[in-house]
Length: 348
Picture 1: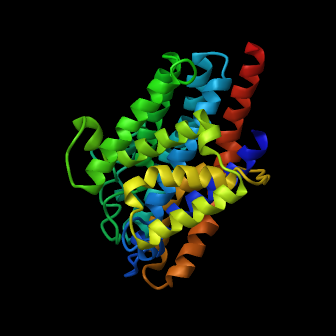
Picture 2: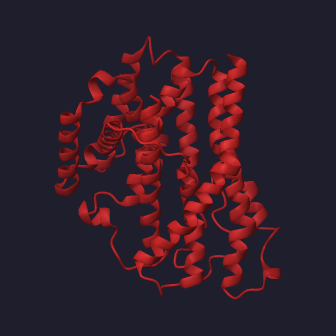
């Protein structure tokens, strides 16, 4: 499992890169079509694929993590420590460093920046601190941005991610990962049917809170990942089977039919492909790159506007987001990872 996790660390970084590239086109205001949207004839795009991939991989790895944990408290604390500290620091850095820089670059005096009060940086941090994004920006900061809807649009997916962790906790407590696997498979199959009906036939069929959620596709991707872990004999292929799966997926993406089963295809293709090889990635900067790249790109737009080609805008985005991801990993994420590992040893 360790070797595969190393390969999956690389996969997470590649998925973060997909999100960054797609967002660069949006935030930079480039009149270009997303490369994956162009290839798939509008069926999907790079940010959607990247986030779906994150959820599919989480479903696979978090289910494995639950199986390894000695207690429910250990599992819950591990998940909270992995997500929340870096998220909180990101809110602080974005609200009190990046946002004021953007504001000043727009030609405003820093004394007019809203550090407190309605729509302020303080409100941005406090209102969003429990993962659900309730304040998307800070007053007047994005007035001259090409994309004004959000200061850090990537953060919205962390709340449904935590909801998926809760699902894993409930399913595990209920014995659905071992004694009642068939029940879990039937539950997942029902959700897949709801997905197929709603996303492919423009119907509103199924639980309203689920089918109308903007994260519905992500929930289904997570479920697909959990099933791959639970039924490896059926869903983990050898090299020939994986090659066939990749070719089949690319054909559906290119010629149509991908959306019908996209969460399952994404989960199976990514887990099978990156489960085939070993790759050691010493620093897992993917989470930091994911949560910082959006506000970094908002800042870069204020610096350069539309004067850079899209390629250079993307390269500049990587050149800033990767070091920030590295700093996040070294000074925030890794200390908490080490802390939970030490706590684990004491409990054993």
